[in-house]
Image (cartoon, helix red, strand yellow):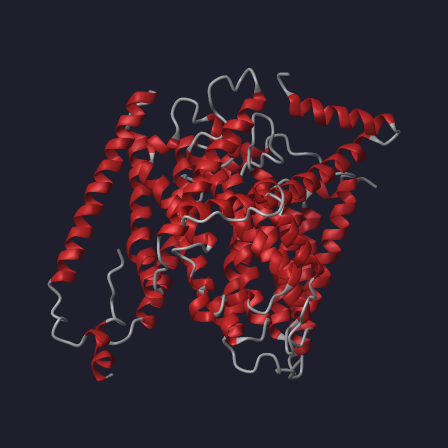
Length: 176
Length: 399
């Protein structure tokens, strides 16, 4: 077993264990911390796949932005330290079933990938070129420029909506 | 002596393989040892940094500073460290123990982690990842998480207030900082730190993008949480904020992270804007690059201390207004102008510099005009009739 495989096994086990703890911890802040740990484990897996860009983006977006937002929201929730309600409700079997279905579907999809049968993943020859290709394809008219622009318009709409909601109405200001 | 750092690595690799270790495992072990050596070196350098900073602060305030322990008081930090290590780690009642312990580790990790992609000299870099700038941003965001967890797990209202202020400040100032970090990326056409340094051979980026450099400097000050942006640990308001419940070595870790971060800002500014290890004669003697790099970083670091001693703390509404109404729009403008000027301008060094400088001049002129209009509007505001106590809480001047 090579060092790479050992690191992979550790990272994968860590990711799965953290993911399990996310849904089983009674304390909400601890659950969100385990979520961060799980996402960090995914970032390590990206590094092992020589996808440094995706790993950095994973940390910036999921840990730097989304997880902090979740923790912030949890912190502002009342009585979060003493919150120890039941961990599951009546619909737990539905959630388990859909998770199982998604897992099965993904497994079926990945088994179609030609590289699955090979003994050891081959090293990528030109990782920098792949990153440049990703950047170019996002602004290429023939490839993904339309989804890219639609996503940015969606984000802009969300941002404007947030500002509109947060903005106090002009009348209320006078009443205070 | 053309490649001393490569030779050192080769020597250790030969040593390990000579001892009968398999080649793949040997290089893996060497990488682990290198990472450990770099991180330990960074942390040990704070012994010197803290002493030097205290000495500089003292001189700026017309004091002597530490001068009892060792020559010039140089052993003062070591004595302080020994004191911190031997102190008891106090866990106040109601703290969230694992989170309380984890928070200082995350804060230190986020600062030390940045040094993994800092190029000290030619071929002297821990890891030249091709997304170095993005890596710096991502590792830096972990520090925010650590500070927030420290404030929350302390079970103390001042700590929590400090944590809220921290989130407001660090998350806000990250926006213009990331935007202006795009400028060197665009100018060099790469996110790798070594490529960014190499592209500055013809001209340092501080000449091509002076406004971006100043914006990076200001936002980095805010990310460090130093005066004038030290309202997340304002002693007189919230009793040092997020780390109020920490004692002993755990408090020392926050302390170390803050002092090391100040020098890290110098290193990042040097790499992105001041040409990194570039300088005369660096191609013949790579060790000279280390001297240039540390010298340039020390100049920036010294100016940070100077600012810290000179400016008073700003209010929280001023802090947010400065960021969202001034720095962020300006950073967006600089990014757009740099991109356009780089695309339409000529390719040669002189022509490129001239076009970028004209672009920066246009941005500067518009900024000054906008500031003038803003100041005029403030002067003509009809709030003078109301008592001053009522008007201070509303839209205060940001600049």
